Image 1 (cartoon, one colour):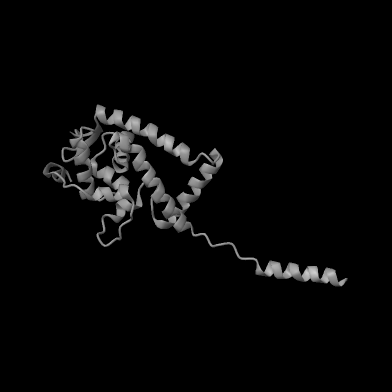
Image 2 (image 1 turned 90 degrees about the vertical axis):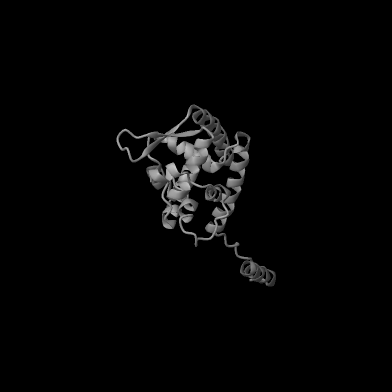
Length: 200
């Protein structure tokens, strides 16, 4: 082997050995950062309707199965009962939800959307779909489905059931640190009415 060839081989080995390793990318950090960014965007999108993400979530849950009890809905969304009472009270005062007597169980009352609540939810859904399309504009339908499947598996490892928000369950434990997620933090406010407390 000629001297110049040997030198070339040596340089290649040194270059390969000294090449920096790719920076470590943490899934947890990425999810936390993106979750915060999406939350802020969703707040901005719903602001013209004077609707918060947590209110949108509850209206949508009621619309999916109207007539279910407040307690059943709280269990489904993993929201502490006391927070759920305050949440429903606020929407009822705005004329978006109403509690009706349950003919099958006089101890509970069923949740229903009002006409105003249904109209507002329809407008909010349009905005939510537009945001979803914008967020996933760089993904194919197959890639989007794959991403949702992978995220669901991460959620299972964390004990977060599909369709629920981890921050809701955390609110039941006052020792849990804050999530920093504005939509979830908003559930902390408000006092339940006596009638709503009696329903539980």
